[in-house]
Length: 136
Image (cartoon, rainbow, N blue to C red):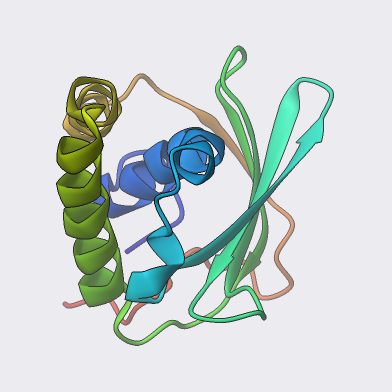
């Protein structure tokens, strides 16, 4: 996965970030499948930190209105795709059980569509946006 809006896995992380507060209000514990996410609201931006535990592997700021993405931290995360897949499946299952599947599925489906272009600013020290080794 690459920390950019052209990557479907990254857009699914954005979608989970968008849903996170509502999932908590619906008593859906998305961390049960190993994905830990925290959000901070910073004016027009939302800072999202995500990782397999309490220490985030990826931290970024996103402004939906201006489509500006600022990557603050991006470290290797083996097993990211499996964790993300398990989390999305669990969230969808729990949403169906609680009668909110239409809302959750709508956000996740929107994440799978091709995005509009986004302006990306890298603030990560090594300048890389890859969380997993890229295949040649």
